[in-house]
Image (tube, rainbow, N blue to C red):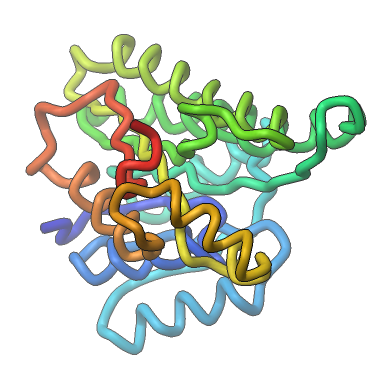
Length: 246
């Protein structure tokens, strides 16, 4: 499905990003596994891809830094010849009630989740425009669709991602480039594993399908949007949340 395609996945050392990288590689893509601090885990992802006959490479870089994102895209283009898929997955949380949230907590989340997505999209857009092809998939969240108490910074960043997705889709559509977002709901990851059981149950009770989603659910959706099977889909936010955001 993605044979010969070159994919950059940001924040791909663990969780959803890791599964996305493994899944895209499984469909034949050459995957650049971007990470900021977890080199060992990023190398484990690359090793797993290679063990299964795929091609992958690690790339360290903080996407919230404008020049770092620019250098990453230029480096990948120079080495692999193209960038066909960009998955903006890198993200952080700094949860707190609005009255207690510090300026630093707000800024850090916006800088990584929102500005980081902008940085990568801006610098890959020039490459894809020359190719007259490409697929950009941005990771939003159900929190960016319906809001969530204690996550004003995170919700703002993920709602912003949806807005940027629609805007860039309009800008690049005439050149054969699609831009879409995926909005995961409650997904079984390291981040959610630490939640108390009563909290988990309370969340599951709000989900029509009455179950937690998996990273594979998200990764398969990303793979579909990154393929030619989704060539007539752009500017959309695909909710993968068990109905949580209805």
